[in-house]
Image 1 (cartoon, helix red, strand yellow):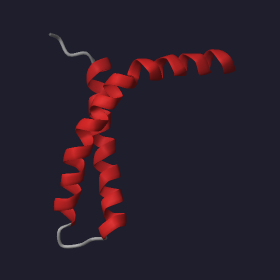
Image 2 (tube, rainbow, N blue to C red; image 1 turned 180 degrees about the vertical axis):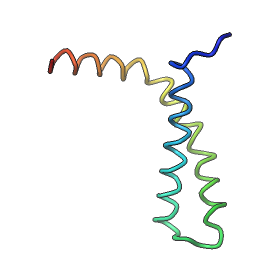
Image 3 (spheres, rainbow, N blue to C red; image 1 turned 180 degrees about the horizontal axis):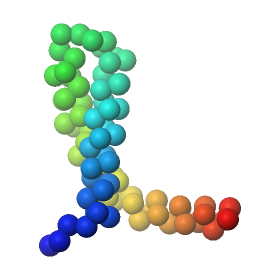
Length: 74
């Protein structure tokens, strides 16, 4: 199987977005505590696979909505 940017891109984007979002939410919830990094990485470890599966599953629906919006307002 050959990797294609269309398939790899969403996985990489969810990796980065969830990394930053879980870091921010962890900081809001516990501040810069002694176990901040451990809590952040735990949040990321659980959050990223869920986000990646959601993006892969919902991508066709998102593309349809995007096409509809572009057609409607162009």
